[in-house]
Image 1 (spheres, rainbow, N blue to C red):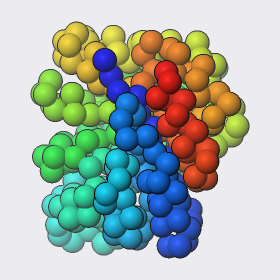
Image 2 (image 1 turned 120 degrees about the vertical axis):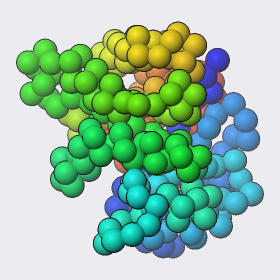
Image 3 (image 1 turned 90 degrees about the vertical axis):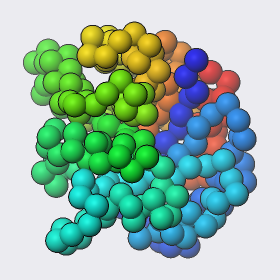
Image 4 (image 1 turned 120 degrees about the horizontal axis):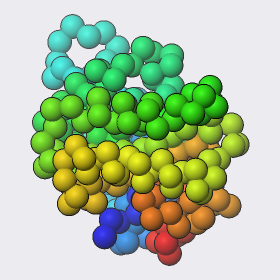
Length: 252
Ligand code: PEP
């Protein structure tokens, strides 16, 4: 059975004080077992948040990572640097990075391979735009992104990876995919993973839903057989709503 995951993407939000306060509140109230809680602060706040979370069950993610281990890459962050601060997960291919920062499927794949080589877990984001959904191209789009992201990975590496299905039209818009729309895409993603690897591998990979997740809609999304948790933006920025999401996940 897959442990449910609640991953908070704090994006480019919060002051140093705000980030450490939020981390402290989450650390104090987070269930010890039965749910994996992850937070992704801005890179600048990672060392301070790592210190706050050190003795807690809450795990740390980066919002991005370069594939090189060091070198002439102004403004980038390397895996070994993140590892020094106990970062275990890295969000890759978020639609905001694909849309505004030129992240490509090939780049996501290179970064995923680099993260795995560092012993980290990539959280690979993919999803269709509203135009693609309306043109009935959702399945083709997400299958293409999934296969590209997992290119060259072994089954063992794939099992250390997390997928996040995030329909672009639902991110930060207040519009959530219906539980059935989300489950349909998650089931498709799992069948593609089974085709690419094998049944056991496909069953082991958590597939998160992201797109305006909040306490009011999380339980019904989690009821989907292939929905293993949430990648959450806005609702991860308040202690109480993040903790409520972890309690809902625990009861799912
Ligand atoms: C996200 O940024 O990954 C996200 C899903 O944001 P929100 O929950 O605010 O829609």
